[in-house]
Length: 110
Length: 391
Image 1: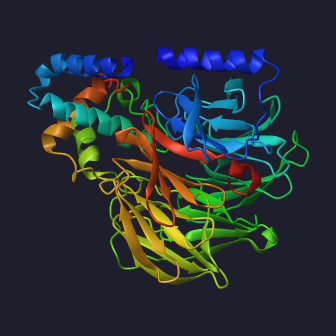
Image 2: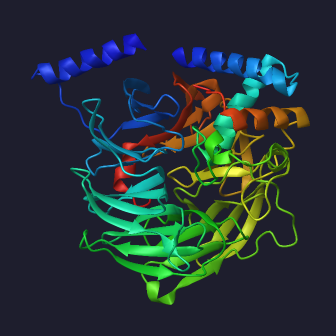
Image 3: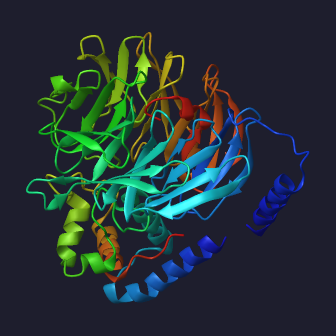
């Protein structure tokens, strides 16, 4: 119950911050993306995004990585590593939204 | 939430407070991991109900569980490095430590005295006294010039206080002998293949098999004859084909065996691979609905149950091992993460993370016997694991 409230306030916060990134994603889609990142990216990068088989995706760890290269990695993967391209599930706008959220600290899904 | 806490407190009071409390065995118990709540539900597989919950276990994404020999204590390995010993009968935490920064799973020794954890950060294996959780050995997974540490995957218990495990970045298999727990002896096998991602040990404890992610194949070590070295099986099973992107790593836990045939997930392909274990050669492939994650035989070996990575993770397919045909496709819910059989296999319990439920199926008729509510359930682990190698 409390988890859900945190999720929604996280999403709401992301919406406020997100206006600067000109995202037009519907709140429902944003919630889907939060779930996708936390749960499915989380199977390699950890639910808390502190890393697992894949590297950590917390803001401090991403620090100096350019947004454009993060977006490219999300959509097309990284050769020679298990990181797949998520293009089948994501539009450009989705990947940009995820990148922006990762760089500022990803909203909590719990 | 509050009601549950009160219920647990009441149960505890009862179990502690009244001496005439009916004793019970643990053979038909198990746990369901509620991954983001950091909680376990304890289930009774005979009555097919939840009998309580234990919280405060930390980050349980990718959590796994092994059992003490008496099936009373569950050792829970959390992603955040937490190692918690949980008493299923008293529904409480017995001991809890945070043993590393990032952990992937663990194993318990043949004699039940040692619990080992496989760690990503810092890469290596740590071994603990099963009673006290005191650390007895720390085995850093160093490789190359010794300055780097690899993530450890596929940690399995082998006969004689040994543990076998694989080093993801290094492409090595190590066997640690903990006959003298504070002085482990390590045997290293190098160049076993690129990026071992998980491993299993056969039910007899003889063969350790590490699946490779960086190339098509499986690295096999005969633990009866480690002097023969690591041998490649299913080499280049995807030859000439472009693998699909892999949205979830397959798991090799357990051993889908039926007679002399073994069934394994193909990486990056919509296929289950069939291997003849008398020759260790490929004996066929079965087309399935998606990329397999778990390929598990029900205990009688008659059927194989398969779940899948995104975007097919709402399905489970069942393969008949005699005809090698898919005989049923089930829809247990969104984001199916795990399946667990009761000891003799009359039911299988399947978790659907995004639908917050665990469904109990009759394995003979595919009929739904029960549905249990659970918050984002992932792994399901029954105490029968206490009695087997590799679980």
